[in-house]
Length: 169
Ligand code: PNS
Image 1 (cartoon, protein in one colour):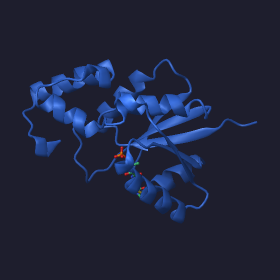
Image 2 (tube, rainbow, N blue to C red):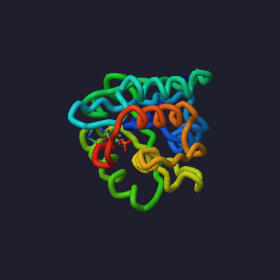
Image 3 (cartoon, rainbow, N blue to C red):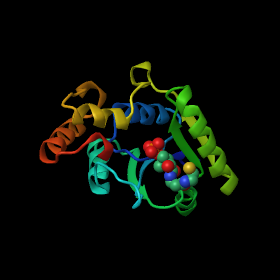
């Protein structure tokens, strides 16, 4: 039987322990997961695509069931190109539901073969988002227990080098 593969798409600006939790849950069901970071030239990211990918690669370097990739344009086009029909997403709270429901149905309306599977994260991460992580580091706080070490280092370095305001993250 062939491997069960899913794509876990996202911005990963930056990867958090909440994403890692979803990936670990996904690996209970799927043989392999492709973590695919979006490259959107019209969006401002704190971390460059290379930085986002490097963080994900380093975090999962020891796990040969995780592939790291990026995509540009429509997710369904990327899935079709890769011949993968399953998308994994995390559902943290009721507030996620609306947008996730829309995304899943839009993707299905463009490409009916695509199924989206939602995983519920650990309660410890159910309030966590990349945006909040950036805001906390920008304001001089740290939440080491919520991000991989490499992200902690990278964000401290980033905010030391560049004087950014909240509107820029
Ligand atoms: O981590 P995020 O920002 O919640 O991830 C959102 C993402 C990247 C999964 C979503 O914006 C996406 O798939 N964008 C690609 C463009 C696309 O396919 N749009 C139509 C469906 S929403």
